[in-house]
Image (cartoon, rainbow, N blue to C red; front, side, top):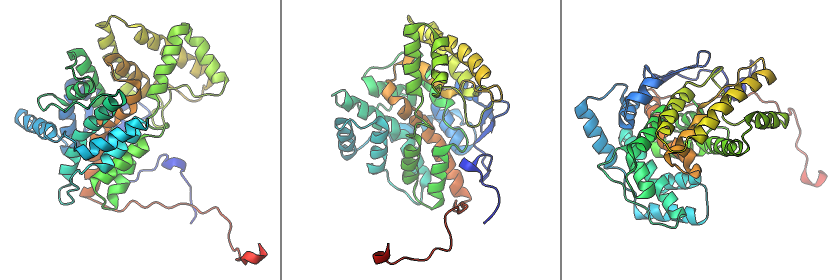
Length: 376
């Protein structure tokens, strides 16, 4: 087969979607036609999930019923808890524990009702993550509360205490902001899996595996470490110059799609600013803003032919650290949000399914003759 090869499928459209629209040149993102800033600021996470799954905003009555449906699916079995506890005792990562918990959970596998699996997965992700974290602290898991919204319940299960409204609002804004983002690696993985007519639990498990990779979901933790280092030294310019001179990647900058500032970074910066304004300690946020200004300027000098600006992970680290999410749970908290996008895409794939089966250009040797083993 001849023809051009697109490494990493750059610029290749493999299907159509009605879920999210990205314009990398202008730096815009819309979810089901709604600008991401409106979704992040106006919606509860349950509204965002409803919008992703069904393509429209719920009525008040529908939203009440939908919240109850999610809340009633949050519990995990003792068998799943044993799997998660073992992962914690073996000091496996939170992403490993999440993958094991999802794969090992009896989530129904309702082949005749994939929507039920989608709701169950969305509901159970925070329970698995919080249980893992409690076990890592040598404590018992905290049962989910059906009277709390998704973000509030997640924070409650981490600590056993109801979080402040400021913390809840910060987490909710984050969950809304990163719920979907086109055919990223994990979402594409989910669509590939369901295109084989596998169940949605298999798709969710595979998507978690894809998200674990540092090129996809692993940067917020290193961003936080970077900012804390700069906060101690007080010299962001020296840090940026030293990092770039060493040929290392500057975490939190640049994106595969965007050629301008990531629109989600702007949303999360605003959310972080609002949170830290009411906080007693805004040092991390002020350091982040100063660092961003310096880094963008120095990156433009070093790479003048390509704009490398702030991506979603930069202010993710600042916001999640502020609201009290442990650094070790940054990527799993991303998964708690993104599972709704995975499920929306999986259901969309099933609506008009065709097995996803790309090809590859063969570049190996040809016309070889077999050599007997005695003659090798």
